Length: 205
Image 1 (cartoon, helix red, strand yellow):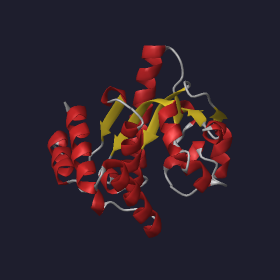
Image 2: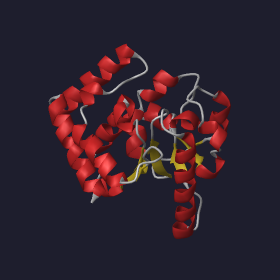
Image 3: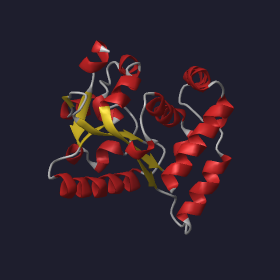
Image 4: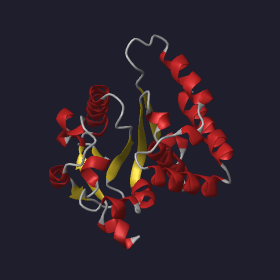
C-alpha cells in the first residue's frame, strides 16, 4: 500500500486538453501536469476506452467539470491513466490499480461503443466494487456512435449481450491474466457477467 500511495497522482481536469487524449500512445510529458495526491483528494477515477471518440470524451468531461465547479466552487481533480501513471514504469503502476481506485471518491465511466469490449475497463469496474465501492459513487456517461436515436435502447441491448469472455486487450497474454483475475474474484466469468449487468441496471435507473 505504501508503494501505491507513493505512485498516487491526480491532475486537474482543466489541464486535460483534447489533443492530449486523441492518441493512446504514452506521452511522458503529461505526467508533469499531475501532482502527488492524498487518498481523499481525487474526485473521479476516469475509466474509458481509448478506442472511443476523443471528441465526445473531451466534451463530456468538460461539461462535467463545469457542473462540478458550479456545485463545489473548486476545481475537479481526477485520475486518468495517461497523466497519472508514470509512463516510464507502467507495469509497476498498474499493480497498484486497486489502491488507486479505492483512493478516488467516485468512479466516472465514459461508456462509448467500445467500452464493454475493453478488458481493462471492465476490470476497473470489477475492482472498484470488490474494494467496497457503491453504485451511488459511480457516474455512467453513455456516448453512442453518431446517428443513434434511441441512446438508452442502444446501450441496454449491448449490456444484455455483454460477455466478458469476448473482451479484448492489447496484449493477449495480459488478456489471459486479467480474465483469470476476474474469474478468481467472482467465482467464474458467468458470475461476473451477471454482477456487471446488475450494476448497469442500477445505474441506468
